[in-house]
Image (cartoon, rainbow, N blue to C red; front, side, top):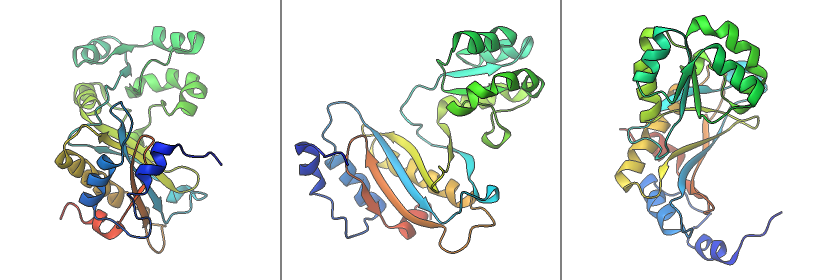
Length: 237
């Protein structure tokens, strides 16, 4: 097991791991315990009462964070003709059809964060699924990234404005960035609340018992701060 450095150990002492903090206490503490010289990402980690071995209990959906993530999102759109031009007009970073598919396939071009496609392109995009899939870049209806041409401008704006996809890992955990430490406490609170609402709405019908078992707030390289799950789920009320 990796050993933590002196600075980490010093700030970690400020966190009482035996108690559950309110969301606002945790947000204040995550700021107090950050010691890095860059603007770190603030993340929420949730342990869910799901069995990821069963397909009907896996979670994959999106949330529109009111204040975005603080990260510039590069969007690539698989579309052709007027749809491709409409995507570029809506601020997509890349848009095209065969030429983009060939570039990804032959040149391993992956300088984008989200891929969106129109339905008519999926037959061709499927040919490079083996490359897009492992990187989480394959367009998928569950993540809202396969859309009709007329919906491209709206979808691109949403993705660039703060819509993020999240899915559980193989152990039933969720890891979602909700902003930067430079955000105001109010901005982090509202993004946190939006995420919790989306997680509650995505509860699989097959999940039994306690659904949200633990909630942890942390910043890049900072200590984890345990949050009261009940209070986290009630942030919007």
